[in-house]
Structure formats: C-alpha cells, structure tokens
Length: 309
Image (cartoon, rainbow, N blue to C red):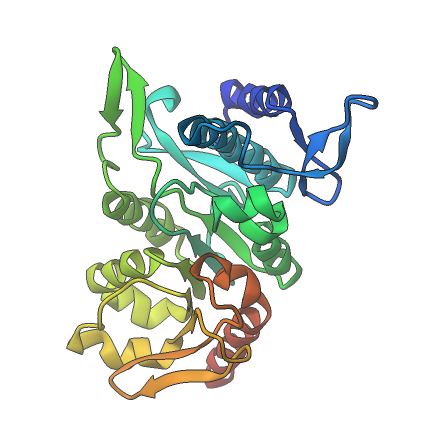
C-alpha cells in the first residue's frame, strides 16, 4: 500500500509556510533569508534571534522547523522513493509511513535500512538543526540515499518517531506503531521479512542503536543469516546480550563523536562493538562526517559475504 495524493500537497504548504517566515532553500540546499528584491533565497543565513524575547525566538525556530519534515519527504520522493503506509489496515490520515525503493520491496539483492535517532527527527533526517543551520546534505539522509543508489542498493527509510495523529480534538497514538520500538518491530515483521532480502545492511544513528539491538534480539535468526553489516553513528545503546555478542561484534562498527581523526580506533574489545572516530566532536554531526568510511565498511562486509558463498 503506497501513494498518497493528500500528502503531496503538504510539501507545497510547508514551502509556502517557510516563505512566510522569510526563508527558502537555495539550489545548494542551504536555508537562506529571502531577498525582498528578487523573492529568491539571498545570501543571509538563518538567524535564531528574531526578537529580544527568548520565548519568541524559540517559537519562531520551532514553527520554522516544523516545515522541515514535509520538505524532506518531497525530496525523498524526487529521488525515487515511495511511501508505504503502516499499519496496512489503517486510513492513511490516521497512520504513519516509511519510504522505500522500489515501492514494494521484494527479494532485494542488497537492501540498506536507515534508522534515525529519537526526538523531533522524522524519516529522511539525521539532525534537524544541521538542516536549518548548515544544509539539507548536512542534516538529512539524502547523501546516504544517493550513495546507496549508486552502489545498487534497494532502500528502506524508517520513521520511528511518527507515532501519533491529531483528530477528535487530541493527539492519538497510531495503534500498532504507538512507539518507536513498535514501529520498528512492525516494519521488520511486515515489510522486511516478507520481502525476503538476500543481504541487508543497516545504518543507525543515536537511539537508532537501541532500536537496532532490539531488532537483533527479536529476529536474531534473520539477522545472523541476512544482515551482513551494521554501521552505527554515535549510537545510544547498551552492551549486546551474550547470545548475540559475537555476531554483533563481527558485523558492526560505531562511528562516535571524537576529537581524533576520522576512522581512528577509539575502543576495541572482543566483548563490545568496535568504536572508531566519526571525525567530529559533536553527536549530531557524526552521520554526515562518517559517510565515506561507513559505506566503505558496508561494501567491504558485502564483499566478504559474497566471497564466502
């Protein structure tokens, strides 16, 4: 079940609303103040401080930031991904969605799953603040999408924070995917497993690490058979359970915030997942900073897998 005409209009509304705040993304994906003379993005960057009232500054920021998800969704669709609404039996207006390419996953030779962190980010985002203050390429998952497409991967982009819908005058949990854990469990059980992929890689940022370890515990046989690489970026997670520890230590690496040069080992133990530097000291930057070694790691793991066959 994919497609959704009503939501196509939401991205246009988000861009219009963004312009009402006086901003637009330029051709490079950088948020800029609109030049009154041309009506186009100018050179002046986003400014948090719009008044002397701190509360007003924060309201302005949040209202502007609320436009980001629909803008990113549209860009994902322009890059060839389609929405699948979940749970399958729900009205799209009272459900959430994930993105995939092809629109219905089926026996993918290579599948890459992207899992964002907790908080206010949605599908296609690593860090909302970087989208606003730096660029779409810095804070969104679009560079990962483009790189994966060039390498021949099918794609699945999760949306684990989108768990409520407003109707009947209040926010209501989306039954069946009420929490990020339930979202991931539903996606794995109802989309990934039935599609019978040959080989699966995962990139998981921040709390996405916890979500991934939960999936490993629930679907350990599938992971050990089909998931050949897990790249974490500054993951928030505990130690792997003993029954899956050897497997996770074999297929995983965590690029963590560090002042050390990119890819420098930070910690390595037979009893824990290897950690290397993401080449940046800030948590929210790690996915952007580590993209090249992340894909190098995934491709090397895939080569090892194919050589074993």
